[in-house]
Length: 432
Image 1 (cartoon, rainbow, N blue to C red):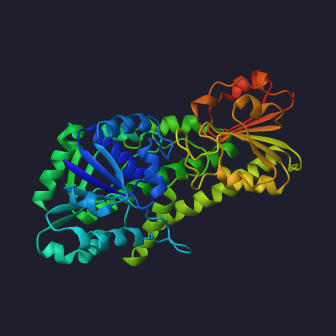
Image 2 (image 1 turned 120 degrees about the horizontal axis):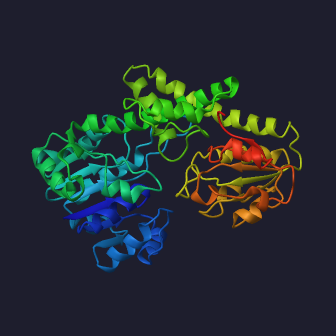
Image 3 (image 1 turned 30 degrees about the vertical axis):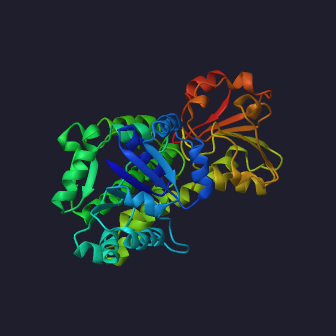
């Protein structure tokens, strides 16, 4: 099939590359000419394991085309995916849909034969209705079907998630569109139960409900971890005991920092906003957002406590600063408020992250980036394990650190407290 992905951000690029690897011809369109030029040279703008290799292979085989020419891409395609950003509006909880609607207005000028228009961007309930209203003329002529097809790709594991999806959600009441899309996804759905056809509004809400529920699990176990610290219980035991119940499951029950990234923060806020618009009190999600915001401050307090409130000139090392491993995404990462605070308190901060140096810390006078764990840990008073990259799971801190009396704050519970005690290392975890 011939597909057009409008927007080459995370969703558009990963989906476009993976669809081309299934044998489809895919046009990836963006109005950022520098990005398109880079992609045409095989330079991938995001850190995602495996993506560069698949991109280069399909580009070479001419199944993958990067262009700024929207008209040509749309005219040559059968299915159009809208994959533009839907960030949170400034001073608001609501999703900013201007990019989605701008695309709809552009499509209105181009389309002259049947196309399926798919919202793959995360959008509030009724957005599809509004896009269809913009394209009303085309709808009346039966030249389009507007469909919701939310993505469920985890950063760092997106290729696997695309090839082996838990489910493919298609929101449409059009039998024609549903038949075509089932054929498109057939190579990866394998089991009928993985392909779920629902209403367009239903599909839109499934995405928000899914992300908000996962955010709830994270906030829940983080609050339980707070209680564990006061009751001398290891939160890992609680997580295992809870997660063994199949009704609950163990995924997303790992205590740690506040959730971050491009999805959970904005989607939980947007769901609260959707509830307000439809006069529904989303009290649980409100509590989750408040709990997550509080956690960022709580962990800063914990760092202060570990250092006995003596922060000035303390040498602090961060191992990992991204919100999760296998990505370079810094959006709403807990490391940002922590490092900003410690920088203002005149701590000497060194950090290493396998995905490279971060612009977020470039202008902070007390913060420097190094390119390996050894250099990062060398003179540390405190090592903060912030992100669970594989690189940090088997470190010998006694060999890495020159000082005798350093401390380790393991925000991901990667290490055993008893083993650290045997090594005479002052160790602090989460909920233990």
